[in-house]
Length: 369
Ligand code: SF4
Image (cartoon, rainbow, N blue to C red; front, side):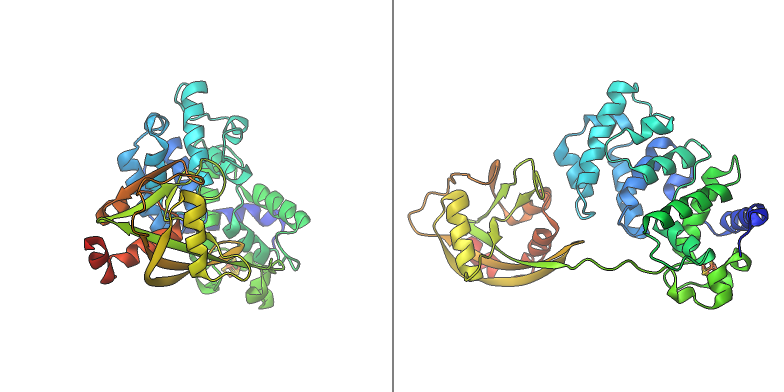
């Protein structure tokens, strides 16, 4: 049981463990506000190893806030491609421009100024304020929620409002003044490395204060929230080939996958076959009459609240059709060589399709034809 008189010993034990076991991550070298900010945004919904790879590539290309502010949208989207949740990078881009304009290019150090930047919620503001600026504010992510749900044996879903308030208050009460940078990272690192889904309690530095461990019910904590139903949609898309090139178009600047390039297509309507869907979509979106040149594949791709089944086809223009489209659902178009597809930012399902095309033996013949 964790009493208030145990708080100092809990923190000491955790900090000692962190000093010995923390991972050597690139933003932990200097803790510059810019690097801490980028790492925090990048690591949301992203595995650490993958996040580090993207982080290093990003820093190589955009080493400071001014470079982000100066970069065009295509550049930042391309550096983010594959990480998903693209509103994060758009907000980050906007925030960099605000920092240059309103804070003379210096990342603001006050919590309320950090929180006011686009794309920065309570958690990220607390993480930057504590890790980069050493302010005594606790941060609570999913790792900290899991650790404290176990240590304090929270027996209802931890995401419930009153439980979240309790978790935040407990994290703040445990935080030793002046040690926020180390303590917050230590709590999150403990959740990531030891108190993970499958906890390794034998290696845990705070085991003696952990109620779920004493009760032998670690696997029952945290209590999960009821799951939202996941919906499913069928989408059909076409790789239109003409005179050695492939057609792509650029999505509008608003809505899903805004500003991305794509192979055209759309949702399969009730009673419609996917083959018919692509014919209809190509006519509606570009006024292109097309004919089928073979089914490529079916790609399944899952998002947080829905799953997509993407039916993919090779297409040709009907003979005598002009290759100049009349765009109704896009802001731009290109006829690209296959190798040039890597230069464009594609939604995840379309990137999978482009990767598959590389090994499809029918493509060279279609491009030659
Ligand atoms: S003892 Fe086990 S369940 Fe408790 S905090 Fe440590 S790793 Fe997590």
